[in-house]
Length: 112
Image 1 (tube, one colour):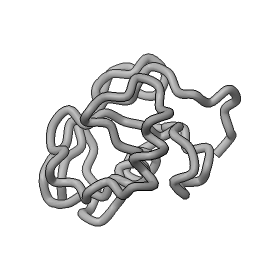
Image 2 (cartoon, helix red, strand yellow):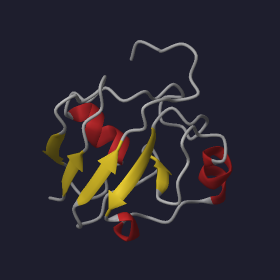
Image 3 (cartoon, rainbow, N blue to C red):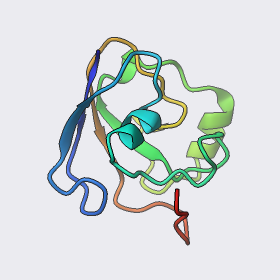
Image 4 (cartoon, one colour):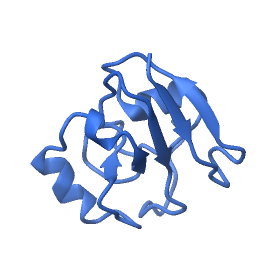
């Protein structure tokens, strides 16, 4: 199983973390399954940008971003070339390092 290293985030993961998840799992699902409660206002349907992450290592191992995801990412806060919506980024066999941006465009958090 690939390892996902999450860089420290003041709210979701203050000390950082390393988790494992099976290949075929979305990054968002892996984070949520490991009690890293990343925002996902659209319930992982690729309709918002609240689950935006920056893949610092392992980007090439993920499935390619589809046009719908790329269009949404244009509205994400702190967009970088390695940005993905974690609900759309599907794990393969390679380990990842991800950063959760400090902010999102969400004005109100959902209680998922």
